[in-house]
Structures are given as structure tokens and as C-alpha cells.
Image 1 (cartoon, rainbow over the protein chains, first blue to last red):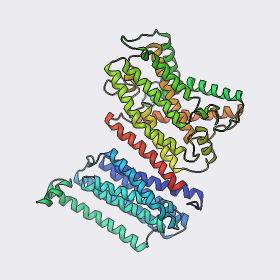
Image 2 (image 1 turned 30 degrees about the vertical axis):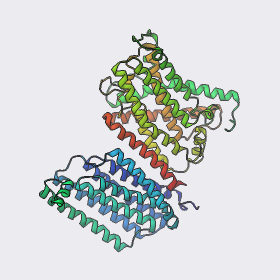
Image 3 (image 1 turned 180 degrees about the vertical axis):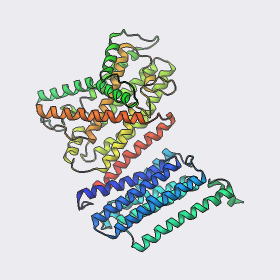
Image 4 (image 1 turned 30 degrees about the horizontal axis):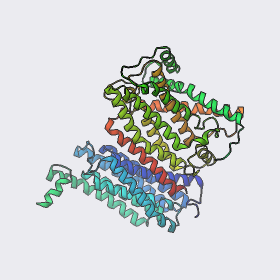
Length: 225
Length: 321
């Protein structure tokens, strides 16, 4: 088997390190109890994503990835966290994240997910020809971890953060598997996510007005009536 | 088992020096941590020699045994101390190949630490007081939660050498010291958490308090006095320095002398004491910044340590093979 990173050593190590830090930030989101810290970790994940996109861009000398990194910085580090913080402020959310499954069990479940996705991604990595193909498994794992967060958390806002985390992970996987999607698609997705967050924001106010709570279990009971 | 390149005499000199240095240095390190903590919280420090003064004062006192205790109560301090002191022979920290290191690998070392912990809990329960019982039970709970993470860290570090023998691990890490290992970074984070939990440091147990409801370590040694208490205190200081020495071996092995010459040994010792001073200072900063966790949050803390260690283990196969 050829070594996964044949080119400059330092940049290779950097890509590997940033990938593992991204996976760690997904776990941190899963373990976090405070809402504001959750948004902060999301912003941190954006920074890690920007840096790893930059590192892959330099390693592979694909210039369009530089623009992707720039978009990531603008959208996921500055714009989206700013909107989310404003939402938290307006909705007066400060409290703790409520979960259906307790944190240690979620962690162990998450560990199982990591094993599963690393195993699943191993044959895919063999087929890919990018410089950072070893990281496809990392992308898949953080995707499924964000999915787990959407499943196990109760409040509407944590679900949105899980959704945004999934988008981050998808972007990361795309970059490491095929050097990203065409620029038009990436831009479209970025704007979709942005508009989605706006819509969610409006939606939150509607949910709270109707049910006087952002807890999703109220929505289950109304659908039964 | 490979044959050690050292001659018998220099080998045993090395072992003797390791034993003496660890045993004499442990209270000094505790003093250094106390000094840093005092400075960080704006108190006037008692000096680096304070733990030694405390130990000598305790050794001069007479031994008082609580009523109704068995021989176990008396034997425990010596057993705990012996288990930890013998570990100093197996951890390479002055040179890479102490001749007795092949006797015990990393797993045996974890076993020795567990033995010491179990003995301490026995001693605490033997007196039959509620506090001793409570402390012993809590200590066993923390230990049982932290042990899987400890083992995962050891296994992560042994992935390169394909062996759990400490000298083999250190040689493989020294040979590849120009490479950056993301998996070791995860293992280091996990190690810090395990270190705090196993040694009763601040987020898990406050070493400087006798508050009934929160103490763990202090509750266990509440019935001990005089020389027996001194042995217990000394043993826990020894455990702290042993953990730091293992950490230095795994994560910062640079500068560990491979050959046994006076110059190399002196340089290695200087570097080692520098590493220990930095580690002690870092511990003081961590302890100053953190508040004690509720006891029921401890499983979460150790679950995080286990998670980080296992992630390091998995990431080795994805990124570093």
C-alpha cells in the first residue's frame, strides 16, 4: 500500500491534524451542555474547516479551493455564528441543552459510529486519488456524529446546529474525496444554508408562539390530535 | 526479550539511581506544585521543601492505631509504598533501557498501580469508620472508570512498536521523533484527564480540603497518623511523579539518553527535571483554573478520556499506517 500522503511532510501532517481536530470538534458539540458554547464550537469548526481547505489547496495546488476556503470563512465563521448568536439573544435561550440520551452514552454511541465510518470509508479511500484521501472516513464520521446530535437532542436550535454540522462535514468530505464540488454548486449550497438559517430563525419564533416552547416533543403530540 | 547492552554493574547503578531519584524527588515535585499554586492564588508560598519537612515531622511522631483495626491497617502503608516504589524500576526515565524493564510491561505497571489503589481502599475500610468507607468506595469508582482509558492510552502509544514493553515503545517513538503523530496528540489529551483523575487532582478531588462530603483521598487516610500517614502521603506523591514520568516517556521522549555515560546521564537528568518542572507548573495552572466536579459528573469526565484515547487509537489506522 502506498503511503497516504506522498507530498510535503509538514503540510501532510497539518492536514491530518486539522482533520482529527475537526472530528474532535464534532464530539465536542455532542458533549456540550451550554447553548452558547455550542455555537462557539460551531464557529471553531468553521475555522478548522477553512484551515484544512487552505492546506489541501496548497498541497494539491488547486486554486479554486482557495475561494472555497474564503467562502467558508465568510459564511461559517462570521455570518452563521453571528445569526445564531442573535437568535439566542432574541429568543432568550441561555439554558442547558436537553438530551434524550445522557452524554456518556452518546459518547460511546459516537465512538461506535467512528469505528463504523472508518471501516466503511477504507475501501472508498483506496479508490480516491486526492492527496488527503485518508480523511474521507473522518468526514463521514463527523457527518454521522452531527446526525446523532440531531436525533438525540430535544430543542429545535440544537437540531439546526446538528444540521449545520452535517453540512460542514459534507463539505469536508467533498474536499478530501474530489477536491470539492464545482464552484457554482458550492456557492449554491452555501447560500442555501444561509437562507435555511434565516428561515429556521423565523420558524423558531412561530414554533414558540404556537407551543410556547422550543421543545420538539410538543410538536409530536399535536400531530396526533 | 532482548539482551540489555549494558553491563550488569552499570545497569544496577542505573536502577538504583532511578529508585532513589524518584523517591527523593517525589516530595520535591509536590513542593514545587504547591509553590506554583500558592503563587497563582496570591498566597505566600511555603517553599519547595515543605512536603519534606512535613514527612520528617510525621516520621518523628509515635504510631497510634485506631481501636479495632487488624494487621491489614498497619501493613497497608508499606504495601502501597512498596508497589509504587517497585514501579520506579520498570519505567525508563534516566536511560532508555533499565535492565529490569523487560520484567514488567505497561499492562503490569497499570496492575501495580491498581494494587496500590486497592490496598489503600482496604486500609481505609479496615478502620470501619464511615468516612474511610466512603473514601475507599469513591476511590475504587474513579479508578475503575479511569482504568480503561489508561490502558487505551498505553495501547495507542504501543501501536508503532507492536509491543507493550516500555523500552520498545520509547525506542520506536525516539526513532520517529521527526514525525508528527495526531494519534499521540489525542492520547496526550486523554492522558491529562486520566492523570487528574487517578491522582486525585482538582476537577475530581481537591487535595487540599477536608470537607466531608467531597473528599476522596483525604477520607481514605483520615485514620492514619504519624509514620504510617507519612508513608501514605509519600506514596501518593510517588504516584504523581510516576505518572508524570510515564507521560514524559510517551509524549516528550526527546533527550532520553540511549547510552550510559556520565555526560549523557547528566544532560538527560537536567532535561527530565525541566520537563517535570514544566509539567508541575501546568498542573498548578489547571488546578487554579478549574473547580471541583460533582462526583456524579466523574463518569462523564472519564468517558471523555476513554473517548479521546480510543479516537487516537483509531486515527492511527486512518492517518498514520
